[in-house]
Each structure stands twice: as structure tokens, then as C-alpha cells.
Image 1 (cartoon, one colour):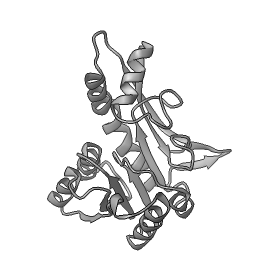
Image 2 (cartoon, rainbow, N blue to C red; image 1 turned 180 degrees about the vertical axis):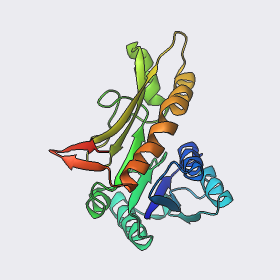
Image 3 (cartoon, rainbow, N blue to C red; image 1 turned 30 degrees about the vertical axis):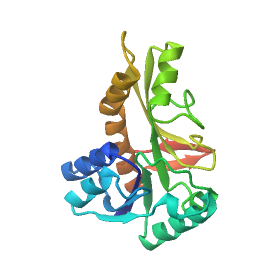
Length: 208
């Protein structure tokens, strides 16, 4: 049984999707053992506590720079014996100390179809604002491995979502969460925990 550690910074809707999926038995071979937050007032911590999951607060503001915070995060993840690290609305930058300590063991969900609307500056509503300003007809979500390159790691799963006339960044964000993020993130976690994802020629290949 793999130890899943979830990193959060805010409300924790993606964390809740993972908790619900685990309760349904949809996450095979893994268990959420710890939730680490970069903010002490993140509601995601309440979600974890309400479900009997250990929480750790590692406040970004307590550290002078990215390097010292990343070192502390890598040490905490090692202490928690993390087999898989899941970014679930984690809004804090970590450097390569963490990626190199957990190669192809960290995954993130991004609210667009990578390589569209991704990289530095594309987070939260900014992603959906950019998609709508381009007039795209389809957007969606991507689960990918976390590497040094922001949103540049191998893609594991993607799910397309229709963009509708009259959409606002908020309505599109909600639809992408409900129809894509909350479905493919638990699915990717389960695939990882069952050793069904291989990296071949720099790409993530899902095997059954």
C-alpha cells in the first residue's frame, strides 16, 4: 500500500475529490497518509482532519527563500515516507531539491489541456481567462508528473471539457473541476499506486 501525501494551499476541493475517491474504493493500492499545507489557515486542513488524515503545516513565510523551503519540504516528505506526492491546489514554488528527491513520484493537476495555457503565471482563474480570451471551444484538465519545468512534466491523463457561449472564468473553472479535474486526478493516483504508469522516451505510458 503506497503512502500518498497531498500538498495544499487553499480550499482543498481536489483533496476532497481524492478523499471521496478513496472512500469509494476507486484508489487502489494507495492511501492518503498526510496532508501538508503551505498556509496555516487553509480549509483543506479541516477536510483532512474531518477524515482522520494527519496534517502538517509548513508555512512558506517562515522560510527566507525557495531553497530553504524546498529543503524543508523534501525532508518532511521523506519523514512521511511519501511514495506519491500530489499537488492539489498547492500554490508555492519548490525547486529541484524536491523533484530530484522524488523523481516521477510527484503529480499535479492543471486546469487546461497542456501545452495550452500552462507554465509560469498560468494558475487559478488566469488559466480560464486566457482560454476565453482566445475563444477556444474546448478546454479541460491535465494530470502530469512534476519536473523542474513548470507544467512541463510527462502527461499522464487529459480530459476535454466543452467551452460554452457566455462562459465566465468562474463558470468554466467550475465545469472543468467537476467534469475533469475531480475525475482524472483520482484516476491517475490509482494508476500510479498500481504501478500502471511507465516513463518511456520521456513520455508517461499508461499500461493495463
